[in-house]
Image (cartoon, rainbow, N blue to C red; front, side, top):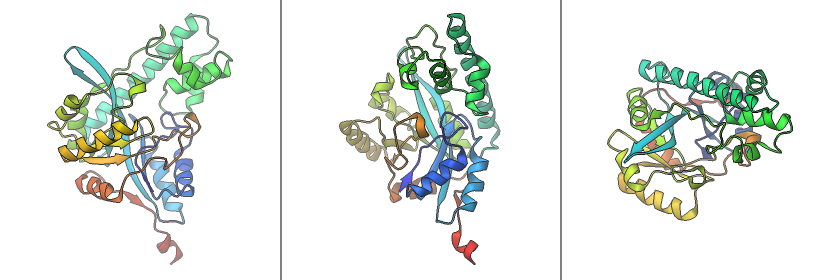
Length: 293
């Protein structure tokens, strides 16, 4: 199984990078992408864990970038997966640092607003829950759950942390065209993540998706737990028409979402196309045969 979208405690997943790799191998996934939000913070631990595996395994290093698309007076928040880019490419490195700082400031602003309204949580509590990872709304949701304010993180997102909540603070997201260009400059492969996950809010229409090919978009995440069957079929057609790579991924977050590793997968053919387009860094592979020797 090939699963190209998974998160760790470096952002908003519940598995450490080491746990993610071990859990993926145990689940029968032999190729996995680590794609935490706006950070490469989990890469090192994941690489070390792959080296310890006793089964064949391939790690694809990536990041899920928070982006925005603007057209005809409408702003649409979206996510862009960047695979196998050089993490030392200066322009992209600087943008990741800016986005991490923005994410931290946004989280603190949301907590400040909730505290001012009387909710019994604290910024330090949220930072502790994040455990050194990039603070996000799921961590705030956990704090609210620990305080007995909500029954679950899902409940928190439906009310206090939704985009319509008075406590919501928008992210300072990167224009998606710029993100695509920076990933390409760093030798990476940009793939639009869950573009028609309609329950998340506004989505890119077909014209908007087509417009991203010129800046350098190389793939579309077609098979995703939040995509309806009809949308998957149309996205697959559109991807083929535009000559893009079609991927499938679980978007695994551990216990923070009811999605299992390998629930959605990418074909071996699509993976090979993706690898052939990357010039930034190489996949990391375990070598149990060498260990045995």
